[in-house]
Amino acid sequence: MMVRRTQSSGLARRSAASHLAALLAIARKEWIIFRRYPSWVMAFVIWPLLYPVGYIFSARALGGPHGSGLTVFNRLTGTSDYLSYIVVGSTMYMWLNFTLWDVGLHLRNEQMRGTLESNWLCPVWRISIMLGSSITKMLIGLFVLAVTFVEFRLVFGVSVVRGNPGLIALILLLVSASIYGIGLAFGSLVLRFQEANALVFLVRGLFMGFCGITYPLQILPSWMQGVAAVLPLTYAIHSIRAVTLSGASLAQIAPDLQWLAGFALVLPMLGYLAFAATERRARRTGSLGHY
Amino acid sequence: MTETHLSRRSPRSHLRAVLAIARKDWLHFVRYPLNAVFRVVQPIMFLTPIYFLGRSFATPRGNTGFSAYAGTTDFMSFVLVGALLSNYVSAVFWGMGFSLKTEMDSGVLESNWLLPVPRPLFLIGQTMASLAITTLTGAGVLLLSWLLFGFRITGNLLPAVLVLVPMLVALYGFGFAFAGLVFLLRDANTLVDVSDYLVSLLSGSQFPVQVLPRYLLPVALAIPLTYGYDAVRGYLLGTRTLFPLDAELAILLVSMVLMVGLGYTIFRLVERHCRQLGTIGKH
Image 1: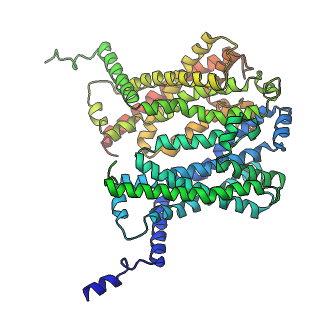
Image 2: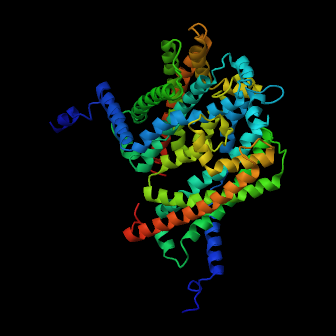
Image 3: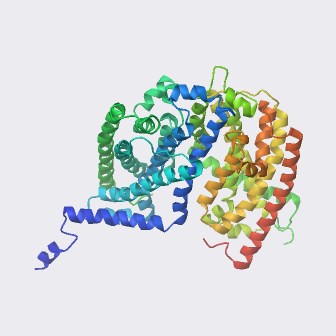
């Protein structure tokens, strides 16, 4: 009787619905924590506008008072709209940056708070701990993208969303799978090495220097172009620029989409494998509580 | 009893206290070598997109569009000088700004403040360490940037260094006031992050301030640091300055006196406020 009652209790009945409920509970918990810190919310509103402004004013200075410097830029990029060009690149980079910090540090933060071990013992898929947080971060990321577009519309009078919005949504969907795959792998590495700052600087430095956030890739030395070719953000930035600035069609950005689809398949799998390895190691060494 | 060391307060004992505080901060710095490496590497990461941005506007004769504003086609040297000076700005905002808060978080502020040492000396000691560390990491950034991007000094080094003195004194004077503010606010990361970025940006760390929109230009001209960036570049790179160099130096000297006075006054007010409320140990 006792056994039967235990089996019918909520936690013991592991089903797709119970896993979904756990996932949503984690997402809700992350949302409540986010709302409790108004300075975090402020940062998400301020930085999308502030971050690209330095590059934009530098580009204005490089163009010269009569736009004489724009000729070379126009020849290389096919547009003299340096403002939209930079905003697309820097916004995508910022999205990746937020995700790396938030998703990548999620497990480590749980560890520092002392809640990781007890959460790990819950009868839920352990990956839910990461995925639940990712749902919230993805919604916040979409909010940041929307804020960026509105702010640039209001402050600079520029509409960054041009061309086919369906294509932009498709690119964002594909690249977000890659970004969260990287975040998952990154979070597992942070937990393994118990050091976050150095890893974040290393990974974001790679994307900042190589993905063409402010410049066309053809001016990079060939070895740097080789590195850029294996980074998903490179293709996302390139294709979104093509759609928004040149009105490119699906066929024209198909090569970029193929790469992005490939990354969207491979990177989440790599992320999952890294997470599974971290889980195995944690079970073997009992190191979850160590920091 | 009267002959004990701490009770004999003299300029010499104060100097020893300042050096001990500076040494303590230096030891903190060298104990985390990875952080030291990142203080050199991080500015290079931030400079890379700017370098290639400059390249994508460059003609075979250099950045000619840029020279119409700045008086030089050497965009990267212009940016590098700005980045080096911004290192000091960041050191003041993050290092000095959080100096009191960090001591409080470590649980040593209360005991330190009970020592027979004038309290502003704590910040002076930290200023000395911060100047030394920032200069050292700045030299590392410059060396690495020279190797990667190229850097050319066409003017005079000595007057540029002399301009740095009032600029840095003013900056660190402001740091005293900012440390008090951060101490009172406690959760001030976003404030510090945004202020650091905005002050550097509006002072023209990356570009000549003439390119700012008309509504932002008065803000840039009201920040003394703008004249520091401008004068140092004028001497080092021979750029076209906003005002004659003598006038910019005079502005820096006046701001030095004002900022040190302001910093000291605010620090004393914060200290009195904390003493009255007894909040030094609370966080």
